[in-house]
Length: 120
Image (cartoon, rainbow, N blue to C red; front, side, top):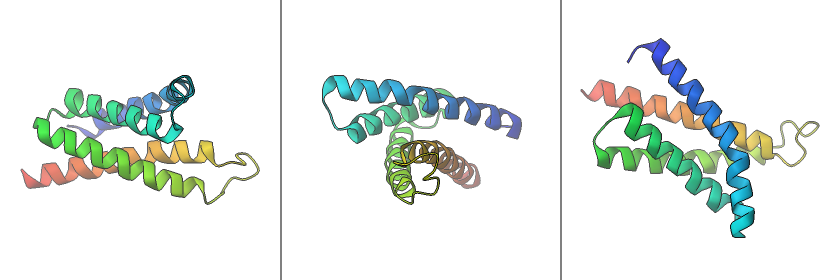
């Protein structure tokens, strides 16, 4: 895949993460579920859709990469949100964690893509 196409796809993925966050949080409130479980499952679903529609690798590789990337990015994003880097603009670190998740997830997808290309 060309670099320009990957940048376009990652931009669409970033906006999908950004716009789906409020929907996933409201869904978690309606289900009376813990917000991290709802966000984690929602982001895992977005990663699965991304991997099956865009990357088109083997199904098991798609599922494993999606799960690992979603869980690792969510864990690191929560740790990143606890740093309180932008306490004046984001006192609870929620926006920081969500933007961190989007950037980390895209970074991990690019790493997985580069590893897959180098193995071929």
